Image 1 (cartoon, rainbow, N blue to C red):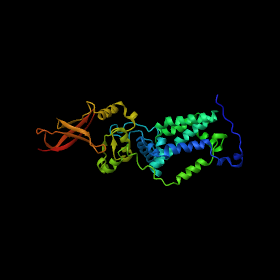
Image 2: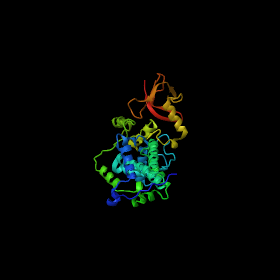
Image 3: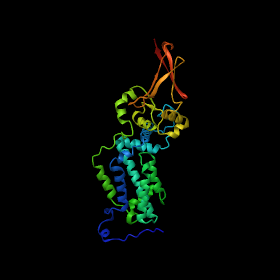
Image 4: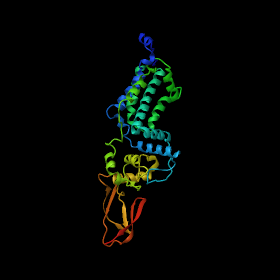
Length: 345
């Protein structure tokens, strides 16, 4: 049976105010923050999932309209269909942070929340009577196992709530206990965490200005923005779900995507179409008709080096109908688009 260790008063603790002595929990919080997020490319790891982009834009919509969206805002495959932003509070938080500090504010906030979650888990284990070493090892193992989910997304706030909900109080009560230093030993609080955080805030740091270029088409969007989303147009863009998230972040409300990270919203029908296109399944090729005449295709693919630009090349035979307004229809599965073109010989 694990029992809490006793922490007798020492000569040092008598001479030095307890708030000036860092506790083990303080060291754990700062170590996780610096090790996981401030070292190397740690901060950019939090932006490895493009869903952050549409969460920010959803929050901006809520702040500007003072209402939570109930219909789709971002796609052309299910435009205007019922959809509810279930994580609206996190969306608003991300949007507010992004407004004042950009993506830097979003990732710093997420890093602080995740570090706090691990610290609360350790404090709770000790409060429940666990051996300090056992609690520390278990916390570090849990932190290492959960890093795959360390992303700047609403679920990051769930970790802190999960860590605190097992205590006799809410997360607010747990934080109040920290401030009131409700126990001795490794659980007590000190001034070192706010002092170190304040010191870090004084260090000049540009932070991430965009999503990681090794995962998202950062350069391609910068170079081809006028092509992907010309002024005065609302292009419909076919790309992967993760890139769709990224394009929502950069193009909304100018552009619409076929799919993005909200897979539960799109459902199996759109999901199958997306996978058929992605995997080049037998029924993925579009059909092009000109004045009722089916045209043979010799190329249909995403344009290399472009973002979301789909190119279809068809052969127009000499007996094709001519005129100033000949209907041209492009179909793929249940979706189709018709426009009028001029055909002359």
